[in-house]
Length: 376
Ligand SMILES: Cc1ncc(COP(=O)(O)O)c(C=O)c1O
Image 1 (cartoon, rainbow, N blue to C red):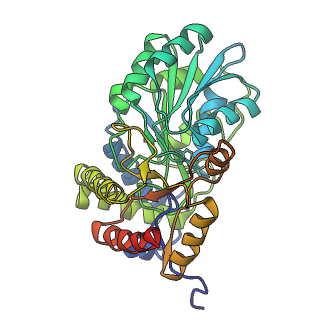
Image 2: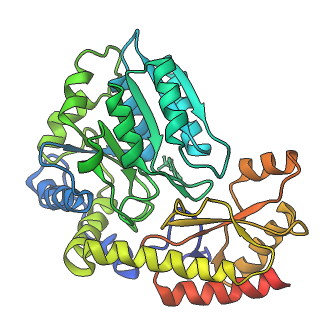
């Protein structure tokens, strides 16, 4: 049967465009996840993930079946003990998600919340740490809803100086920019396959420090899938705790090899910066459009744009449908953010995802088409 679905080029923030070669690798053979064939895939995958991360050798890599949220929930359940507090630092919807995961798992959780479009302010972080004295602090490296990249090196330095363990959600930036795991010494750095790694969704990925592993030992009620200590013995054998998606594993084997040995990690990071700069140039050339994130904190993977007053969220959705007919999937802004902005009488936003294996040629063609829409 031929695909009954349109093959849209995705300019959203994930899932993303998947290269034809990676799609093809989806046809490679299934394998037994407790057989020697498993290691042939996952040992190189993990080695290449560590290269992309620049993670110290003593960090363990866990591949969770699920998605990024699976790994985020595992970090909360494994690392926040009864009688301890977790501070969830949020600059948007995905920082709020970390807080929600702490609350629904019955943790003593408090939130330090910044307005949408803001980045973490070190002074306010310090005040919250002094007041709350948390054992664990969660933060978002790249806030996908607003296009803000936080200075996690500075934030983690402050958090560690206060004696707390930082946990970083790097889901929408890993593979497109440095993760700074070495410099931050964070307890866990979390990502997933369907963003800058240029793969379909299906695995959450966590880099886990030795400190986090020993901390987990004193935490009760860690669950099973969400327990890094039940995951680790399998991870050390390059296995997943439960049956993996073999199609994705094959694709990931080929894509991680491509990233490390063909494109090159530094070239990949540089390409993301070039794509961001191209998008910035495009936005700067449009009258009445502004960047939502502050200068110096604008993401290399997603740009969030405030539109002129006359362009409403409904108008953005119309643009989405027109672009669909032209073969593109446009991102009319994070829904809850546009609802909140509308309620506050503020202008709406849209986003451009420029991550993964998108190239400049694809981006330029898209921006040209988008320009005509925005002008109309
Ligand atoms: C920053 C960030 N955190 C968490 C998530 C949730 O990840 P997943 O959908 O892989 O569970 C996303 C998804 O877009 C994200 O962008």
